[in-house]
Image (cartoon, rainbow, N blue to C red; front, side, top):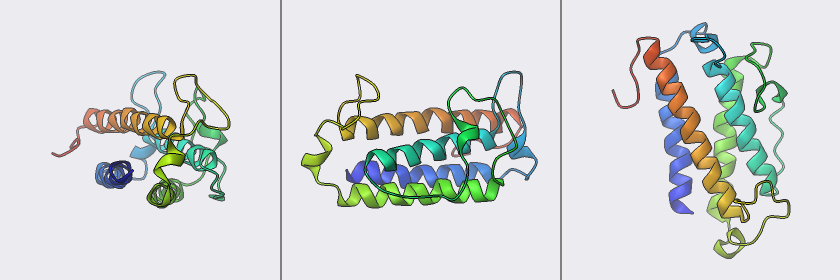
Length: 155
C-alpha cells in the first residue's frame, strides 16, 4: 500500500498548488451551467475520504456538515468555510495515509462487510476506486482553474 499512501500525499500537494492561485471568491465560482465550483468539489472529495475511513473502521469526526456535497447535490455556498473544508480534506488524507501504512496486506484482500458496488468487493478495490474518483475530480479542478486563465498542473 506504499504507492497508495504516496498517491494521497501527492494529491494533497497538487490540490494545494492549484488552489493557491485562487482568491477566496474564485473557489466558489461556477463556470458554465450545471457545473460545480471548486468549493463543492473539495467538499465532495472530503466526504468521499471520510466514507473510506468509515469503511476502514476508523472513527473520525471532522466536526463539519458535508451533506451539501453528496453525489448529485446542487452547487452551494452554504456549507463550511472553504479554509476549514480544505483543512478537513487534508486531515482526512492524513488519516487515510496512516490507516494504509498500518494495514495488513491480507486484510486488504478480504471482502468488505458492506458491498457498495459489485465491482468493488475488497478493501483494496475500494481504495483503488477512491484514487480514481479523486483523480477525476482533481482533473475537474485543474480544468476549472485553466478556464479561469490560471496555471494548470505542473505549469
